[in-house]
Image (tube, rainbow, N blue to C red; front, side, top):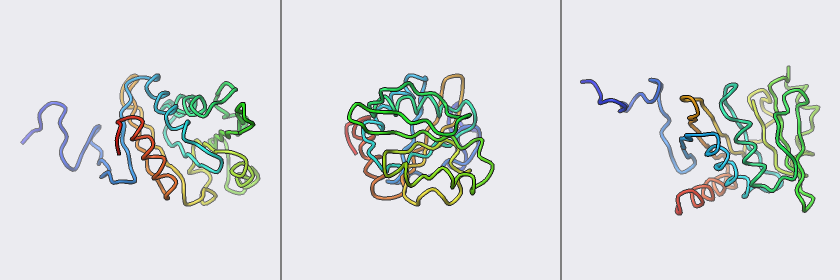
Length: 183
């Protein structure tokens, strides 16, 4: 039996791909504009502290840099956010002396090359946002927040948040609280 317009079966979702089953460690959000994508980043950015790792996965144009602009704004960055594709890492400053690192691993050729970036030093000093995190292999600590961004239509983006570890469950709870007023 066909589904009504816009409905999806249990096994398939938007674009006929299997949809993840959400649990307490996950949050799914659909953004309808770059401004909305940025606002979600602002909400998360206000919760970040040194040592936090935010992994952003998505194709070119999925909204990773737009989301990062919001993260940095919510965190309190004094600096303008731009994609660090050609320089690998941008460091943003806050008035209290805090640092936020923005790593774009797209141009890394190997995990040994990534090891030279010294992620541990960055994490000791501030929060770290990683675009194209799969290129870092096992260098990413087991506890992190993984955000999959996907271009759906013109300005629409699907954002799937997946918390790995207690700290990141707390971040998801904070986002839920700020967005929906409850957990």
